[in-house]
Image (cartoon, rainbow, N blue to C red; front, side, top):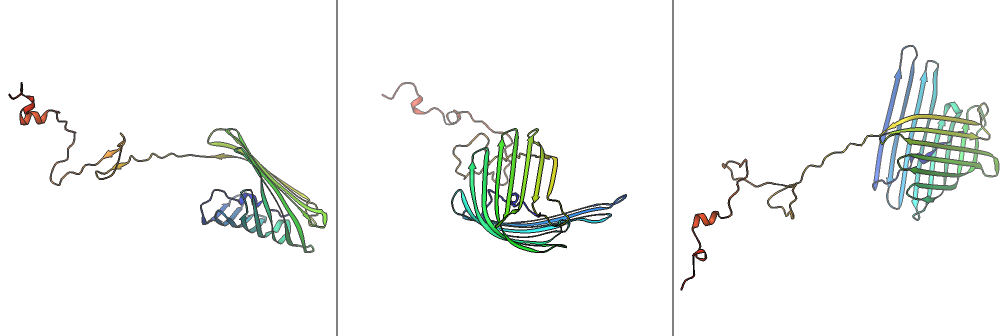
Length: 294
């Protein structure tokens, strides 16, 4: 039953090199009832034009007056080799546990191919196919080791200024025994109310054809909420040109700094000189006399 949608951890348009991030959250409530929720996540990414990869570690625990009711975690490592513009080869490793799904340990190692199905300005989709080796240790049940096929399909559709749909579906049958399979689908719908506010609803369905004893075959989760986005614009300062700078042409918004010798007062207002100032000071030029020399 333990399936994790790892497509949500893919990132696009990254800068080349390594990046890492660590998040930790803790919530505590006390009074008439006691409740605590703690979770932490560590993530590292590598990106280049030819190769990408990421590693994620996630832990979560919740308790109340009756004790612990959520205790799970997983680690996922994935390497991606880009073969062409629309295809890549991937290998992955995953380790997880979930106390309340009776899963003491699940170890997965596998690989496969990922293809770009469609890509337009408003619609993008990918699908993948591969195989994986799986070992599960179930509490109060027999352990099992097997090989499964791993297939998935993911899509994203955007209607500008209206809504966005995202969906990812996995199908993992036991190779050689097709009545033993698992299915997972995660779908979200984001409806734009204003440019800053979106209504978001998410639906998650998990199904296991042969669940451990004491568990149901399916789990359904539905969540609703609001998403707020804020864009803050900052004004760029006007450029300042020094006298020696090669600024050509000078725009109306450019401020020119003129050095003033030490000891001399700085002008507070511009001084305008008449065009004929030199004529008034030096007297008339020879060409300005009436007539011409004989």
